[in-house]
Image (cartoon, rainbow, N blue to C red; front, top):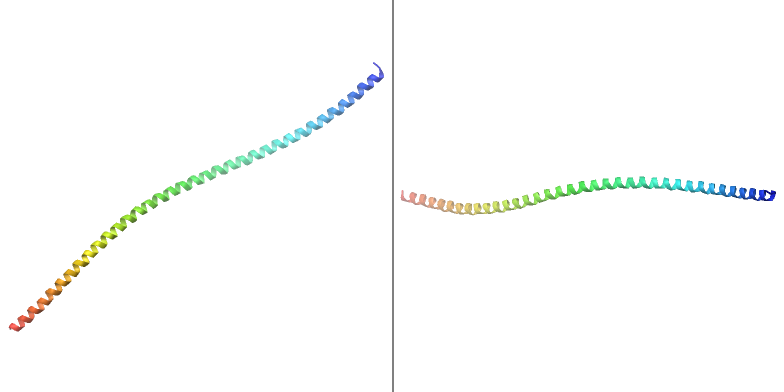
Length: 129
């Protein structure tokens, strides 16, 4: 082989060596970017896991709230029923009291009449004596 040909081969080898070094540098940069992407992905996954945990806790609190609301509604229904019964009892009691008042007035009139008759009869007895 001739010297020029060897020189050409040497130059091509040098160029290839430079290209290989450039490719290695690009590969290292690509690897760094991939590592960075993987790290970002892990952080995103961690945030997503945290979000899921918080969502589960929120769902549990909501379920607890719904259960408490149902219990409150049941107690309110009981109170409404009791209130209706109490109103009915008050109305019945008022009716009984009214009848008692009427009877009491009637008895008072009767007692007043009897008292007057008794006084009249005593006066007549005194006149007769």
